[in-house]
Every structure is written in structure tokens, then in C-alpha cells.
Image (cartoon, rainbow, N blue to C red; front, side, top):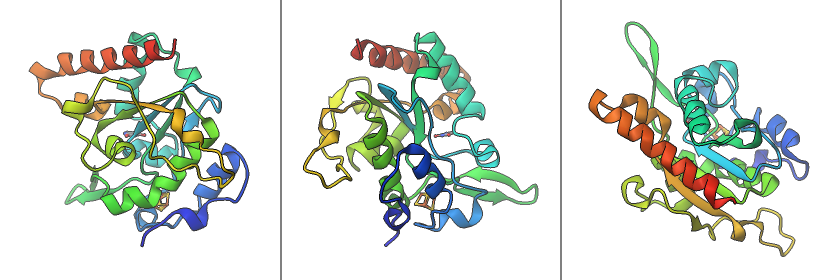
Length: 219
Ligand code: URA
Ligand code: SF4
């Protein structure tokens, strides 16, 4: 099966994992994409945000959340009173999946499959273990399913912090770093961008409200 595990370093902190992830071939997504887009931000963040996968611009620059969705997310964080410098931002899947739109050959985002999400999860679990945030905000259905299971639905499960118990520790040292983590689900910033004109403002306000709930949960 597809699996990133053989590519994870045996030890080391985030920088070692970031370097190793650049060579991951745990699933076929590395073949078409430009490169791995690892998480970024404060290595000791209390709040971690998890998106779906890098977009076109993230793939070309190698940095998470620098494209249109990232800009909208930055604005929503500001509006929610969250300092982006203090948080850690990453994705459930670390390579860009896309199809080419002939004849213009624009690269169109494709959602990752469950197999690809599972393959890439060891990287996310390593980030969770190493950053050890108190709260994780999942953005959209992919991140929610990756952390809360396949029955996750943004529409019904968003906005409420809940404990995350299923995440494996990764380090077999008898501790269980994952158990204290809480998860709060919300919509993906790309969904706000894609929304019809009449819905966009309320979706944006919903995203900001959920981010405020996340900030309050850390107090
Ligand atoms: N969408 C995501 O989920 N992540 C990114 O890094 C960019 C867009
Ligand atoms: Fe590895 Fe994840 Fe990229 Fe697949 S998507 S090759 S598992 S880093």
C-alpha cells in the first residue's frame, strides 16, 4: 500500500522531517508535483491549522498557504485576532494533486484519495507529535476526515472543540502525546473563495467565528 512511513527519519525535530519529506515517494503524487510542501510556522505553536493539500502556487513556491486560499486565511486569522506568526500551518497531504485543463494546460486541483491521505498521514502525525499543539483546526472535509475519520462532515461537525484520541503517538515510548489534543473543524478557505456571491460573506464570517472559538478555547 501507499505509505510515507519508510521515508520518515528515525529521529530529529521538524527541520529533519522537512528535509526527509522532500524525498518522500510514499504515494504517486510526488511524480507530477514540483515538490513536497511541508508545514510552516512556530515549532512550539499551541494552535495548528491543517488544510487539504498545497495548491498550484504553493507547489511552485514550496510554501504552504501562499496562494489565494492562503491570503484569505491570513485575513480570517487577523479578523479572528490570531497572530499568524504564533501558529503552525500544514496540510493533510503534502503534494499537489491536479489534472491539466487542455488546451490551456492550466493545472486544476483534484481532491486527494483516501489512500493518498492515509499514505501521507505519518507526516501529519509527526508534525502533531513534534509541535504538540493544544488545539488543531481542520480546514475542510479532507483534513477533517484525515483526523476525525471517514464519517466526518463539515456541515454537522464544525465549530466545536472535541478531543482527538485516535492519533497514534509515533514514538513507542509508552507515552501518548496525542490524547490531550483537541480538534475543531471548520470550512476550507478555498470553499469560501468558490462560494456564490450571495453566500461568500456569510461563509467567511462563519470561518472567522470558528477561528475565534479556537482562539477562545486556548485561553
Ligand atoms: N489549500 C490548502 O489546503 N493548503 C494550502 O497550502 C493551500 C491551499
Ligand atoms: Fe509522500 Fe505525502 Fe507526497 Fe504522497 S503526498 S509522496 S505520501 S509526501
